[in-house]
Amino acid sequence: MNILVCLKQTFDTEERIVIEDGQISEEGVEFVINPYDEYAVEEAIKLKEEHGGEVTVITIGPDRAEQALRTAMAMGADKGIIVDDEDLESADEFTIAEVLAAVIKDLDYDIILGGYMAVDDGSAQVGPRLAELLDIPHISTITKLTIDGDTVEVEKDVEGDVEYIQSKLPILVTAQQGLNEPRYPSLPGIMKAKKKPLERLDIDDLDLDEDEVAAKTETLEVFLPPEKEAGKVLEGDLEDQVKELVDLLRNEAKVV
Amino acid sequence: MTVTETEIRQLRAVVRDFVREVVEPEAQTIEEEDRIPEGIVQQAKELGLFGLSIPVEYGGLGLNMTGKCMLLEELGKTHNGFTSLIGAHTGIGSVGIVEMGNEEQKQRFLPRMAAGEWIGAFALSEPEAGSNASNLRTRAERKGDRYILNGMKHFITNGPEADVITVMASTDPDKGAKGISSFLVERSAPGMSRGPSDVKMGLRGSHTCQLFFEDCEVPVDNRLGEEGEGYVNALKILANGRASLAARCLGSCEKLLELSMEYAMQRKQFGRPIFENQAIQHMLADTSLEVETLRSFLYRVTSLVDQGKKVIKESAAVKLYASEVYNRIADRAVQIFGGMGYMKEFPVERFYRDARITRIYEGTSEIQRNIIAAQLKREYVR
Ligand SMILES: Cc1cc2nc3c(=O)[nH]c(=O)nc-3n(C[C@H](O)[C@H](O)[C@H](O)COP(=O)(O)OP(=O)(O)OC[C@H]3O[C@@H](n4cnc5c(N)ncnc54)[C@H](O)[C@@H]3O)c2cc1C
Image (cartoon, rainbow over all chains, first blue to last red; front, side, top):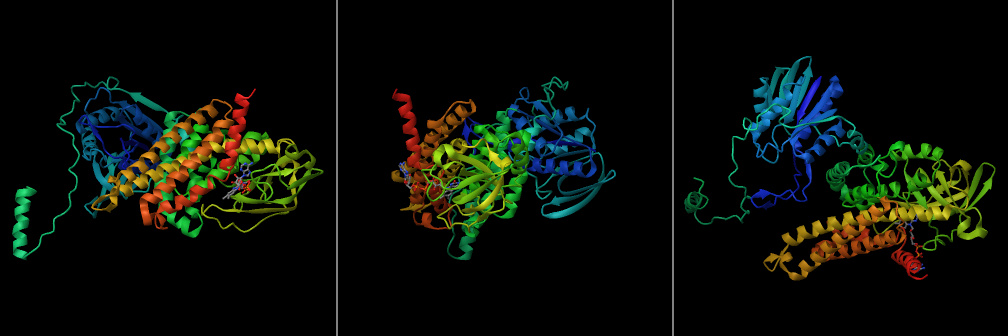
């Protein structure tokens, strides 16, 4: 079975976000595999353990993103592809899906896995967009995956309920928390991972035109959410309280 | 095989996650039960932590001193009893075999130690041989292809768990320090027994005990180096361990800074966070200053070690500095936490007790100062 995993390197979830000159500062920050993508990597390795085959991990990002691929290889992935994002200034979900599709269209694959979203941008778009571009079925937020022959059975999380879906390979699925418990890469595994093949591509290698894949969205401003202020406790007659609440919601919070 | 910076970052990230997700949630249990849960030990073995300092050929990670210290720094951020189990095994418990062992001994012991199947310990101290370590009484007499050991050791970290112990004993008492030899004593050695675990101030989960040798038989093949090299071996093993101990202290200091900052921002008195008081700010500034200084100093020493430089003075100084800084920072942390800092519910109380041993074992602060002074004399008095 040929298994592809698309992953993104993101801030460690415990990092504090600091904005400097309108940008999120990466100074001194630790990076990790996006936690949802980590479920995808784990599931891919389990599929390989069960069905045999090969796991290829793919990422788009700066040099440092190699570390995420190496970690996935230390967990058990066989090889990696990194697409340099230098020419992809301010790439958005559209760009990323186009570039991934360009990488993947020339590869043999039975299944593509990814996290259902990245914890940094939280858009949850790349998986479905990629499946669309490759013209294969896709199921998002899965919490269980079974493959028998070319029959795929998944359990999908739908806001707390479970949907059971059957489909066929080739397919793209995205992982939700609960799919599995990702293993720690062993430390000797990390040392061995550097011998595994890693292919470096840039968009010229993919015959892509920078302008064609240019972002469709534009970031106007980056700011931190306002600090949480102490709550207000309303007192008095119930009727007055309701009136005051509606008034506050309308005029202070401006949400109704 | 050289280790790249990317790899070190990755190794570090894995150890950090392991500490945060697996060990830290059990820290209170380790403290209460004076025992490391088997699951944690098992996972640490699977991760390869027990092979931190063992060369790749023998199944370890083959890290240089800098890499090793970076991982120990991460381990220092959690329960020091757990850190001590790994630290003593990967440090004084196995360094002798790595540095002084012959090929046959390396093949026999190191792969099992790297996998954590066999736990290592180091036994030098005796009631009459503490700071004056060469004053030991344990005897080893050669009889054919074996040595017969008689005597006792005390305060031996990992003593209750150990499968192979680097033991110093005198083969020629008339020669004093030059008559000491070192031996690899295996769990199965007839005539070795252990006392009950010592009841200590801290480092719960890590156990020390007495070791008794009564006509204990050790094959000649288990002698480490030549006869008479034991004391020098011991000094080398201890010198190698100094930076590692400093790295563990650094991790604990970083953790204490984090805990102290969190608490100072969140605890309110007189209607504002206690952090707003200059007195508290200055404590935190001093802590931060000492953490930075220690980090720079430590990694300068490790880089010298990795370049093959002789660093007797520097490693003594970094062990001394790290342990004293750790104690000051732990003391400030308790102060910042106030009454809460005295309660067992909070980890600062534990760090405060666990910090204390670092000024005593692997050479007391006084002995480190003696070493530094002796080196100074060499440098300046010609
Ligand atoms: C928890 C724990 C774990 C340990 N683990 C191990 C282990 O794994 N293996 C092992 O071999 N040992 C171990 N030890 C022993 C430890 O290394 C010794 O306790 C330490 O070296 C000090 O020796 P001592 O206790 O005999 O103190 P002493 O030597 O009696 O010292 C008492 C005091 O006198 C001071 N002093 C002594 N001589 C001088 C001098 N010349 N100049 C100035 N001051 C001096 C000391 O600094 C100290 O303040 C451990 C001890 C503890 C408590």
